[in-house]
Structure formats: structure tokens, C-alpha cells
Image (cartoon, rainbow, N blue to C red; front, side, top):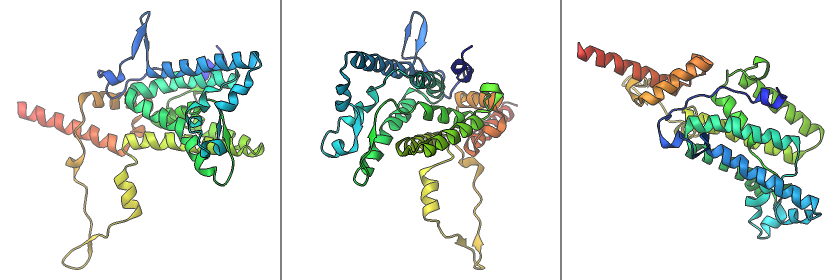
Length: 294
């Protein structure tokens, strides 16, 4: 089996809404389900063929109208923020990126649904050129080629940290090793663009998954920025307010099935505090219903 296929070979997992249209395939081709991740990979694959044709016909000057340049974007050529990812010369790295989009992106799409997956990838695609445009006032930056594939792997490793990959190495450790290696390579080659792209996309992917899991919330960030003073009792001492167990939202059966599946795949330690609260709420509701039937 090829190395890339070995690394990216992961078992299929069920998401929260496996019965909803968001988690269902977009369409079928000869009985094979096609998801949004497949269409994204297909668009980039077609762009690679078009790029190859341009280079073969000695029409590489087309890239000067497609690739991103902070100077030209600031001068009014806004379309480069959208078109930069369509210039993809054939390379093994491009093939690996397509594997990542199809394998890891598909798992994220099945878990969170098509809409959230497209939001995640759309943010990854536009994050770097938007940041480079802002930095362009101080430092001219250029960018071309598909982005976000490796960040999808980081999102997968955040979602399933204990999922074994190549040589049974857990996904979280594989992600840590690869990010460290790519960072060292960028530093050694003085690749500022590559280093900024790596850390911004991977950091956003990690934060996005944690936000969807309930670990990061806007309320928590606001409280962290502006901590509220503790309430004082009649004695003048601060009063500790214990969170109410009933504050956790009630989980649906689809969510409970997804949480149980995640425990079976990655262990109970992979659950976040919000997910554990939902599972505990579902268990309490089930026991209460059994008591009422008696």
C-alpha cells in the first residue's frame, strides 16, 4: 500500500446528525456517495490540469493574473483573494493535499454537517490572503496554490485525538510532530510566508473544532477578558456560585449515539466538559423516565 494511503487510511465515523440532510451525501455517482469534500478536491484537481496545460503551452504568464500579491490587491485587484488557489502546478504535495481533503475533510463533514464543514474550509481558504493583505501595508507578500488541506488534518486530530494513524501513532501526536517538522523546515529555509500560513490555518482549525465542541465560547473569552467580581455575602466574603447541573442542554439521541461512538473510538478522555455534561444529562433523563414508568 502506498505511504500516502497508509497515512490517510482512517475508519469512517458517525457524526451528530447522521440522519439529517446536512450529514447526507450531496449526490451519488454510480451508487458511490459524493460529499462536499469530494467536490472541493475535484475543483482543485481541475485547476491542476488547467495549470499544467498553461505551463505546457508556455502560457505561464496567466499566473500573473491569478496568484495573490498584497501590493496588487491593495491597488484594487480584489479577485486575487479568490483566485490564488486555482494555480496548482503538478506535484506530490498537491496529491497529498487532495488526500487530506477527501479523507479528513470527509470525516469532519460527516461529523458536523456540510454547512459547518464548508464554513471551516471557506475560512481556511480566505484567512491567509486576508491576513497577508493587512500585512501588505508593511511587507509585500505573495501567495499561490491550494491552502487548508493540512489544516483539515489538524481539525481531524483535534476532533479524534486518540485515533491511531500511521504505525498506530495517535492523531494528536502525529499532528504535533508534523506541525513541529514543517515549522522547523520553514524557519531553516527562511520561508516567512509558509510559516505564517502554517500557524494561522492550523491554529484556526484547532480553535474552530474546540469552539464547536463547546470548549471555546465567546462568553468564556469575554469573561476572561473582563472577569466579573465575585458576589459578596452578608459577612463581606465572596460567595462561590456553583454551576447548576441542569444548565447543560439536553442531548438528542443522535448526539448521544455520536458521543458513545466517540468514546468507543477514542476513549472517554476525548470528551470535552460540555460533551460529558450532555451525556450525563441524557443518562439522568433516562433514569427519570424509567422511574416514572414504574
